[in-house]
Image 1 (cartoon, rainbow, N blue to C red):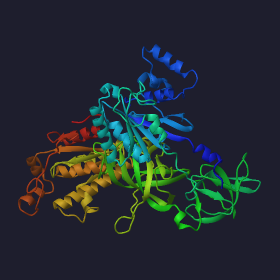
Image 2: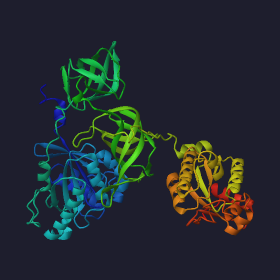
Image 3: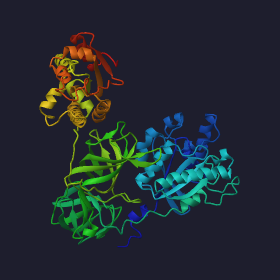
Image 4: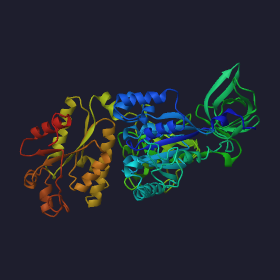
Length: 623
């Protein structure tokens, strides 16, 4: 087909450029100055920002061109992504000003998603900050292929060649760790226009390009027409007994007579007609066009089904129920294995579960390290699992394929998730797909009328842990609070009946109890665990498994008190050598270092129960 004059290729002529950087390093000022220096301002805009600056007692403030929201002007922070058409000679660009403040990174990842190149703005004096590292990680995550570094505010260093060279080395080293190739590093002053559209007289030693020259050298977006055909189904319409499959062609071309496969089920149909409305009739279409197809036979795809070439394995998408993903985590709480979300890929939605957290990025040194959770605003590589095969093309820089997002049950985007490729099965060939409830803690609390938590009672044998726990369970029930007790004897009679009392078996006993407690707490219950759990390391393990719902309670009874009480005769048997490695006699007990609640045994059992119940209900705070 002749693509020279198609609407899709005309639209592709504009090159998206994203501007990123620390909140105070001058992104908005840079864009305002760039638009002014290249005569790209709308009529009256210059007079408007001069007047706005004068009213605030400022010299001309170029950032006012973009900070159109009053909150931005008041706080000096860009809160949303702004897209501005921009032209250099005959070439058109779309400039994206992406937020720099940490809390606005969610906007940045969506604003920069389709950028072909990036300008990373770094204060030459301050150097790379935490946000700089985060934005660099995002550039890698999104797959920006062309990165220009602007060392802004170089005038504050008097354009000192040695100081600027050191700043350049630091930034290049940072980006090299992320395998990001830098096209140019430009010392500049956005406020004064140095090396933006014209060379600076204050840096005669600099022989590199100005910003406009570097932008002009960015290659235009790669053509998607030569790639294998892909069209996600947006909808199916029926007019006059004729069915049409509508969607936007993401890559490749389609012609009347082509055979295509439909979704994971792989049904094959022939394209009988390529349909457009209010446009010339043509028997073909290419990437970027929104069209409708009439198929023979008259099959009915579902929304989200992917159309691709039939009978050509080399042109088929990946197909897997387990997918490796690079993640930028946007939720304010950490991500854990077992949580479930909706993965959105173009028009498709798939229920997925986080099967494993394979590596977490340390933002201090940008290394990948093992981890059991992903912190807020963190980066990681994870494995997602679905109950069915997902069709996808792995993410590739410069293309939109494989750019997924994770959505929670409230339809909020909680993570950017470019897909790396299929994930191998774990050793042994069996895939484990832990799943989490779609009901969150707030929903369960609303349904039950109370929050859930785990209260871990530890103390010497015979200190009264189970007695206090069982009575507290009864008292809580009378208050309408659903509580469950897990005590050591009950667990060892069933779930842990295969375990002895060696250090390894004790640790396994605690591990199992902690996992059961976590499951119960996640179902909305209050859980009271009564276990000796003598070692701090084992209790730390339990806290790690349960998470933020864990509360350590110390039943503080002396050895003499417990031995005198000894209702089961255990201490006597231990003293006689009949019970080896008995805690308090022949095995150590490590008192908690910082329990949230301490129950002294110099009072009555009723007093201890009342204190515990009031702690559970929030009537008393931590000891």
